[in-house]
Image (cartoon, rainbow, N blue to C red; front, top):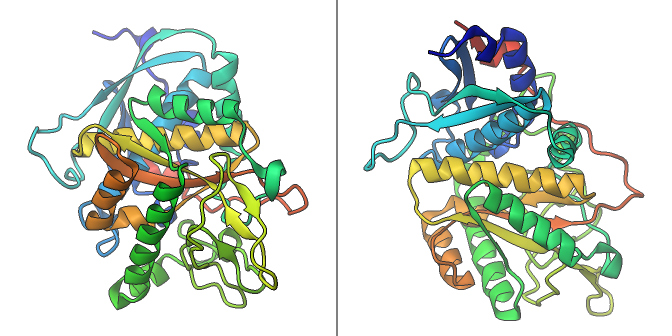
Length: 359
C-alpha cells in the first residue's frame, strides 16, 4: 500500500499537468485528459478529439498523448519526485484508440530526488518550445553540430525509441518525393481540407487548434527541399516544392539557381519504434516530445513533416527508404532559428481545470 507521504498531492498533480499540457499535439488538438486519485495520476486519451480523416486509427492521437506523458514525467522530476509510469493495460492484439474510460498510463511516486541539471534544462525548455515552421538560418550558421545530432538521437533512445537522420543523397531525394506525394494527396482531399479548417482558428474562438501566429506568412515562393504543410494562411505561402537535391546531415540553406530564392535544406530526423502497436505509438510520442525539448534546450527549432506519416502507405515506404528496422512514427525538420525574427507566441492551451479531474 502506498503511504500518504509517497502519494502525489493535488498541488503536485496541478503543477505536473500544467506543464504536461504544453506538449505538442497533432493540429494542437490536445487529445488528453488527466485524473488524480489515491492510486496515482492517470492519463487518458480523449477520443472526441480524434481526427477522423487525418488520423482514423488514432495513432497520432496516442503519439500526442505520449508527448504529454514525457512532459509530465519531467515535470514530476522538477518537483523532486521519482515516478513510475505503468502503461496500459494494452491487449497484445489491440489496435486503435483505447476507450475513454481506459487509462493509458498511471504515474505513481516511487521516491524523491532533486532533478539533475539536464532534467532541469528540459523542464525550462517547455515554456519556450514552439513548433517553428519559419525558415532556418542559412549555410554553416544553420548547420547542426555532431553534438547536436548525438543529443537528439540520445533523447529518442531515452524514451525507448530510435532516431534516424535522413542524411545521404538518395534517401533525402526519395524521402522528399514521398513527402511531396503525401502532401499532394492530402491537399486534394476535400474531407481532409474540411477537417483541417475545423482546427484552424484563433485563440478567441477556442483554446486549441492552429492560430495564424503558428503558421506565419512567407513572402513570395518559399523553396524547400522538404515540402511544408499548407495551413491556408491568407497572404502568404507556407508550402514549397521539393527540390530533390541533397544537403548535409547538419542541414542549412544553400543557394538555388540564379533568379530563385535559397533552398532550405533542414536536418531531417525520423523517430521510430520496433513494433507498431498502440503502446508503441505512446512511446514514439514520448520520444518526439523529448527530442523537441532537447532541440529547444540546445537553441534549435523543430517542426513536424507529418504528411508522410499521416498515410499508412507512405509511412511504410518511408521506413523502407531509410533502411530502418522497425516502424517510422514521426518525421521532424530541425535547424537553427533566425535570431532576427521575433519570438513565436505560444499556441493556446485549454487549462488545467478543463483537463484534470480530482478524485
